[in-house]
Image (cartoon, rainbow, N blue to C red; front, side):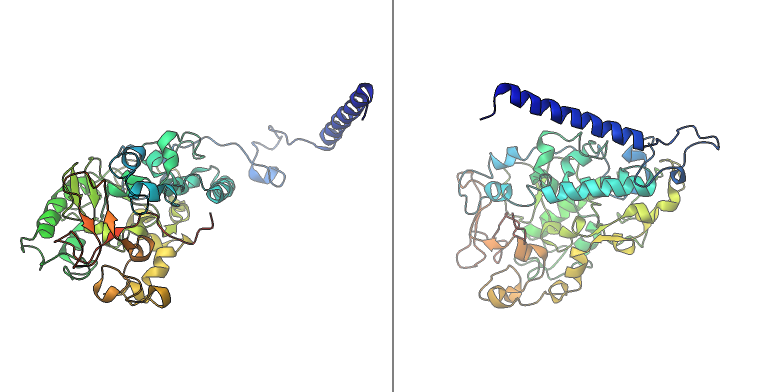
Length: 425
């Protein structure tokens, strides 16, 4: 074992070596003058991999990253713990939404180490391309939706995120989401009018039929109209027309995190016969294939809006390309939903699965056990309760008309909230 003086000598030699190393680097490095004779510093004056500083533009005022939908401070959401440790947890870990969601990639979207690495690279690329890291805002929209909509995406490095923001795509994010094209869904022209088959609404023949599902859909439609009429263009004008549809006829999908969140506390979900334990609304959107496309088709608005850099909000005239066009029309980042839409499963009525997903082996709520939506696989039906069965009126769902406790949605089981996917952790 080395003696104490010997160890001290080793430490001294190492320390001197570090000092000499830094001295050598400093001597070899010639800093770029910040006041060159030929004028201000430009990118061309800088050595490779150096960056100029920038004056931050608040994300909410940056035309490059603006997209339609609810904007920061447009809604305030409950923390996930109010659901997972309340009515929707602590009764059956095999099916309860609270327990299953905790281990899902939705619940971990803000903690995913791959996401953080990717976001860092995106920030560096953004600084290089547009002189600020604001492009990172499109990452935070879907990975930190609570923090984003509550106005904590500035600065765009997630440093302002706090507490429940790190629960990612939490309960209120999905269960406060509004269909931006609700009028077309209601009319059966967007996702079909097979009310009794695709939508699994017992006895419903459409508007005016008087069934529970239809009456509940009528009520949701009224509330939705109030939500979308409050949305505006970047220029400050109303984004929705008097027919409750987006003003630009070319805007036909809300991918890339262009979600609409209700400012009201009503919880929206896919069953009309759930108990009135808290304010709730029946939402066909939640069992539509279009629901998942809100975040799982990502495009880069920065490149689409590049010609409008520096445009101030509220000028009353400017319409950004990201407000006129569907996200699929500009540069892609991810195309998960688009790929699904090109598959046989997304066509009217869906398609039969194969192998372990074949009809008879893999039950769904669709006629013939077809697979027709993202949820059919990623939130597969199972038998159980959505909330603690001690709550009066909670329905036991199986997806089997002979055993289910529902008389309104006979083919629908309880959606499994583990959001099953191909993730390796």
